[in-house]
Amino acid sequence: MLTVNELLSRKGHGIVSIDPGATVYEALRLMAMNNIGALLVIEKEKLQGVFSERDYARKIILNEKSSRDTLVKDVMVKRLFSVTPEDDAEDCMKLMTEQHVRHLPVFKDANLIGIISIGDVVKAVIEDQKTTIDHLENYISGGYHPKVLAD
Amino acid sequence: MFTLKEFLLAKGKEVWGVSPNATVHETLKVMAEKDIGAVPVTEKGKIIGIFSERDFARIASSLKQFDLKLPIRRYMTKKVLHVSPNNSMEDCMNIMTTHRIRHLPILEDDKIIGIVTIGDVVKHLLQEQKFILTKVLDAIEEGKNNLRTNVRFNIEHNVLPLVRELARKHPEDSPPFHLLEEHLNKISSEFYRKLVSADFNFTPTEISIIKLIKANYREKEISEFLNISISTVKKHKYAIRGKLGIRHKSGNILSHLDGIE
Image 1 (tube, each protein chain N blue to C red):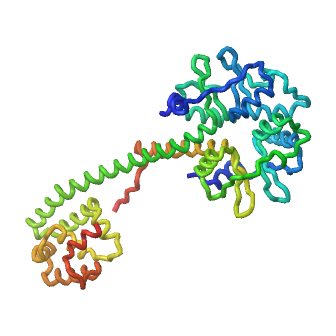
Image 2: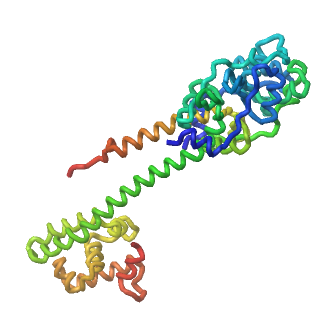
Image 3: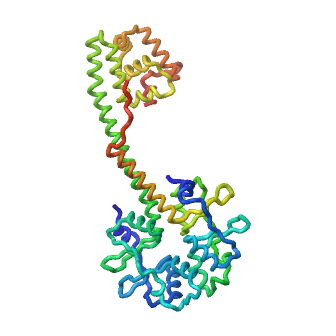
């Protein structure tokens, strides 16, 4: 099974982050610029929370707030579920399904080294599945030839 | 192949929709209340657009003024990618990853009868992946086992008895016969494989003797078969007992051999 480490090396270790004191509007701009659905909220190199499109859709207008006057720290999700590089795609999928989250920060020891989105996982698992199926088909249809050693 | 028909049956999912005249504010409320990330915009039962949390976030970041009282038809995505009940979950996955979308309406005769989300895809992957792989691996393993059993059965019940009979009839040619028997044993016998691979460190002669003991040969027959003296057979048996760790225990070699099979 694919590890988080492999997932990260396919998609890149890049992290797009924002300060908890930034406004929601600034966060939305940053998300649009990077075409991503969530930002890691980091202060003094420490992960404070995650801010996602969902937080914006649910916690601003419906609570009669405005994106320009509301700070990220007031609407971000603080309770975080994270994974390690040794976890695998299945662990990620389970966490995402059980906790209803679409993004998982990746920690190696105490260091934040990346973020995995639900789209990253699905994409990688499909690619991986195709490779596995190709191998198996090859194997079953006889493309696999054990080496025979002549005396 | 798992199609969306089964998915629809299993999920028995209600589909939410908003009218194109609903305001942005009303639309957001529906999405929050129903806990969904995107909502189809429908008119007379037909889907004419879709509006997602992403659409909202992107619009809000690009427009200076964003009037929440305006109807959703102004902001919805009009080109809606969709699937039919005959499509598979795999089709959905491919569309979602290619187009970077997380919601796919399922249409039948232009009518929306369900929606597949990326969360559904993940759930499906979790269930299906294991299921398929296990099935394939089981099938391979079963095929291998059948083949192995057939080969073993034929060698042990048809070929080896013939070889032994020939060996007995032609004692002058016994070395090649023994070699032949050894090779056949290697191919056919799991027990033999364990004997040679285990930590017993048996010599080839000891292994031949063990095989003969297992085939119920007496010491005299073993000595004739292998063309060695009875005292040598006894010596080998003593060594075998030592390697099996039963030199000081009662019981015959055979019963201890059964334990390693």
